[in-house]
Length: 345
Picture 1 (tube, rainbow, N blue to C red):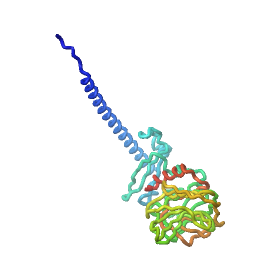
Picture 2 (cartoon, rainbow, N blue to C red):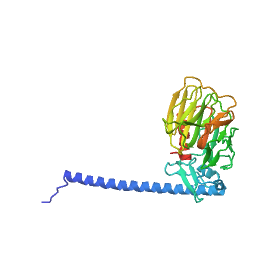
Picture 3 (cartoon, rainbow, N blue to C red):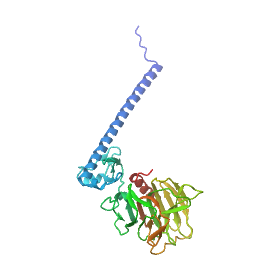
Picture 4 (cartoon, one colour):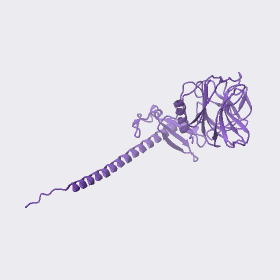
């Protein structure tokens, strides 16, 4: 008699399990293959953007402005399109979005060649929040015409008259270096509401020493200073508003490390940002404005249009002054641009 016995339940379950495992392995292999394809596609895309940026830089003579190691040029994708280097705005294979405002960074190396880095967002000077911006100094592009190591004025990139008058400070290592008696006058900036943003690194301080990075403190005003005491041996950065006393909490800084420093002042609050850390101090009294005729100064504690004490020693890479208090979101936006633009730790 013919045996028509079929599979048992256990056998069927075993077959199903085997098929599922085979399917999972196949899916994983396919997924890995697709991931590798996307990575390879993105890498080819980035290399194409590097080539396009290189063609743009050399075709327009921008490479001659890179006179020192570490000098940078920022090229947006839409700039490549506008100059007919590429035929259309491409899509970034990673984000699948048009790459209009994405940025290629070219940096001069020790051997004179350029290295390239691709940033998937805009880190050119046009990316910063512009509302209320009164002063914008940038050491990467210290004049409207480009980098100039002999510049005696720090160009205000937004176009008004508040350029920085350089007294002794020198351009080096991608920034403006201050060595004790150096300073930059910026004109008068007496605002009831103000935001100051600075990218800076500091040299070691002596015990019981105070140095001002930026200030218009003369019988009033505001600023950012550094202090060091025997009890607190690390370098401390504090925001200050002069009302008979300095107020504001502090952060410790490492010497020769670049930091984003943000000061926001209004009638009720004083806010200090060091990189992505924030500290708030409440003000119970209105801010007292500085003496008329006192310039906002980089590199010291001013007296009128000059500086005679508490000089800064270190490098300043960028300065922005707003005649309003930026929101936390706007501060983060600017910080993220600075982080990529100035290689903040």
